[in-house]
Amino acid sequence: MSARKQQLLKEHRRKKRLVLLGAVLALVLLGIFAPWWSVPLALLLGWVAHEAWFADHLFYSPGDDYRYDFPEAQLKLPVAIGAHGLHIAEGALADGYESLFLQVRVKSTWLGRWLDPQVLIEGDAQDRQDFERGVDGIRYLNLSGQGAALRAGHLRLRGRHCRLDSQGSLHAFSNPDYAGRRLLVIAPHADDAELAAFGLYSRASEVAIVTLTQGEIEAEHYQRLGLDKAAAARLKGRLRGWDSLAVPLWGGVPAQRCVQLGYYCLQLPAMYAEPEKAFGSRESGESDVRSLRRHNPLTLPADADGVPSWNNLVADLVALLEHFRPEVLVTPHPQLDPHADHVHATRAVQAAVERSAWKPETLLLYANHLHDNDRWPMGPADGGVALPPCIEALPADPLWSPVLDADQRCDKAQALAMQHDLQGPLPAKKRLRRVIQMALAGRRWPATGEDEFFRKAVRRHELFWVRRLR
Image: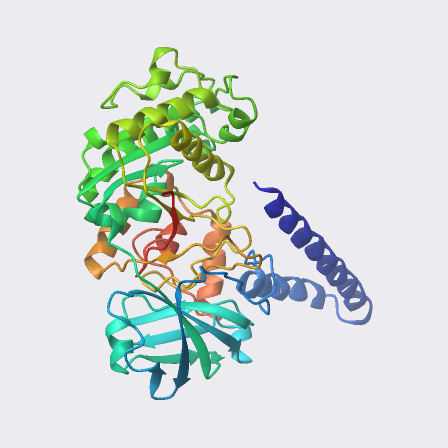
């Protein structure tokens, strides 16, 4: 967990303790001046209200503006927003600009403090993008795939439980279709490639997928099979290793173009800090990365000794760059995605690029996790992907947001359903919370799977930040 994430969580817990203290004092007063049964009733109603409306992990104010600094040369157009649609100057948006983001102030109505504010997008395709309850700030709607309707003047926005300003700015990006380039997808864990880029890699003409870790920790679910902690972790690592090689075939990527490096979950930061030292698994008792490499299509430097060290990881990545010769690397966003393994996966990639004789042209950066909002993308599955919360401006990278049709979204959902780590049963507390939120907050979850990623990742858009390497 990043230092910023830890600070946000610390502040969130401090505020929660103050609220709980106030609630305890209120209950004490209620117990003194009201009938005895009012206290348990108040406790029950307070808990239901918390689960319905206050259980989201939101580490910023809904009134904060999102801050994005885009490259100065990128196209920015004024937009008028009215009942008859979005209006831009005639001929201002050329045909090559298809990744489109509308910067506009969104303000919730009173009902939008209890039900998720939604913007309905009506153009060549119907879309919906949700925001924080009580939103009152600058947000960025994703209009990618709606360029033809916008140019024709029949793209309309309609707020539900919120209002939009009458003026906004359209940020437009022109990109090649990277599915036509040689791709190398870097997945810190099995399922990261599918969550971030299944739509992209399933269309790619030439792609390889490299998974860095076994993902073996937090294997309590497998202890129900009668295994001890270490054996359960080994089984989970084997299963997720198999997932990393087998599931991409559903997207057209054969196992011969998938590589499992077999390093250990949550050990990449320690490896980075001490590059020559070996860091075995925290839970499985293993310390030899060769245990999951027998199905790899090529021999790599760490196959010589199996040592789980940073130097071996970087050497492996150098060999893979020079073998697959990718033009584009798909890897986690090191400033936006706070997961420690994700941050250090991209650090390892950058170190390998510096050492490699082969130099890719472009990084496509993705975020499967966020610092300060664990519901993003907000709203139900199949909706669009508005830009994530960004309270502190990121590096000024262009954006690319390819569109997934209904068939591609269905295939992506099934790819996630094959991932063992997304198959676990939903805890009873979360299941009850969902029932309460469905009844009181109007939220819905997809039928494709219970894990939250079936809602967050199976979307109309995939989203990448584009960083040029040369």
